Figure 1 (tube, rainbow, N blue to C red):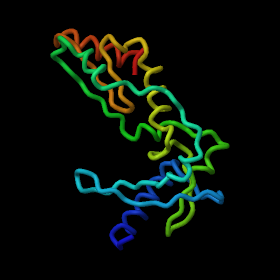
Figure 2 (tube, rainbow, N blue to C red):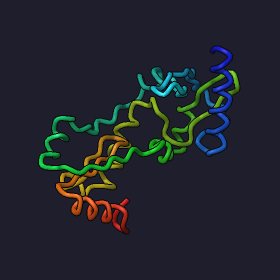
Figure 3 (spheres, rainbow, N blue to C red):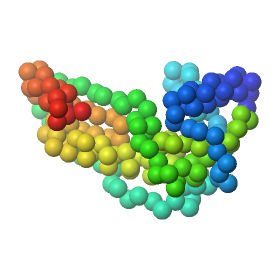
Length: 172
C-alpha cells in the first residue's frame, strides 16, 4: 500500500475498533485488505474474502429483479429514498463465525463482529431482514433493494401518511 493508503488504513481501522465493529483476532483465517476509490474520491476499505466465499454455503435468498420493482411505481409521483448508513454493520455475526471474518493488515490481525461487505451471503441476509421489517408495506408503498428503501405515493398527502406510518410504532 502507498503511504497515503496506510495512513487511511490506520484511521479506518481505529474507527471500526472504536465503534465495536471489529476486534483483535488470533483466527487462522486472514483475508487481505485493499482500498477502492469511491465516486467522491474517498477510500473504501475492502476485505478480499474470495477464499472464504469459495467455501461458504451460499444463501439462495432471491434478490428482486429491478424491472419488477419498477413496475410497482406506476402512477407514483412522490418519492422518498432512504439509504441505510452502514446497514450491514447493524447485524451481528454468529459467535462461531466471527473468526472466519478475520483479515490481516500491517497494523494487525482483526475480525468483524458485525457483517462486513464482501461476504458472499451478506446481500441475501440483509435483504431478508429488510423484507421482514417492511413486509406489511411491500408492494403497497415500499420497495426494498438490499440497503436502499424507496417510499412511493401517488400524491403528496398520501406520501405524508406513508412516511407517518413508517415513522410510527409499527414502522421503522
